[in-house]
Image (cartoon, rainbow, N blue to C red; front, side, top):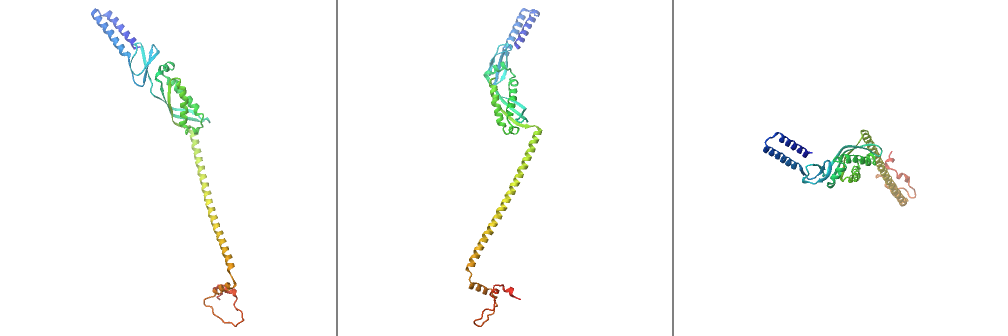
Length: 302
């Protein structure tokens, strides 16, 4: 301890003065000076300044006897003080590996753990665990809990459920750290990766899925075009059927309206414009076959 070294230095200096200085007055002045200097140095070494966000843990010959809060504090010359951080601290893990439900290796990269030590219980934590509580308590628990949670998921489900995974890990870790007066703020998982072989398998599966989707789209397109063609053909058939039905009704009406006189009248209308009028004796029939009257005049030309 520093104060012990000062006492030893003062004692040795005093012995030297007693044995080597002959002038009594001078001896007295030197001894008083040594004692005063030792007292001043001891007082200055006993005054400690503790910044905001820190706590001073007091050691008395190696044993923790108390703690001080922020501000100007004074300890006994034989005591030591070690500062402890009570602000929110960050623990970072560059890469943590775990296994999925199907035993696929998964790598969680840049995992951050934010935590804070309860100010009133710092000396208890230091007494029971020590200043290296982060390495002793937090690190192994983060690794174990992550493994326990990741194994609940299949490999391809870990990435989409990353936020939920972080919350589940934080919930379990928080319960583990509470007993040590360590408050867990949150657990953040920046990224999740897989082995090179598994990444390649995922890529091949995605390509196969895309090809299947494209083929299904082509099949659906062909089905749609075939359905359109059927609808067009069905429309044409319906139109022809309606047209035929209309023609049949027209023919039926025309057949009902025809009389022998009307037929002869229509036959006469078929005659050419240069027809000659002939007067036949009374009582003689027509010498022209009426059936020929219905023929096209062009066909009767030699």
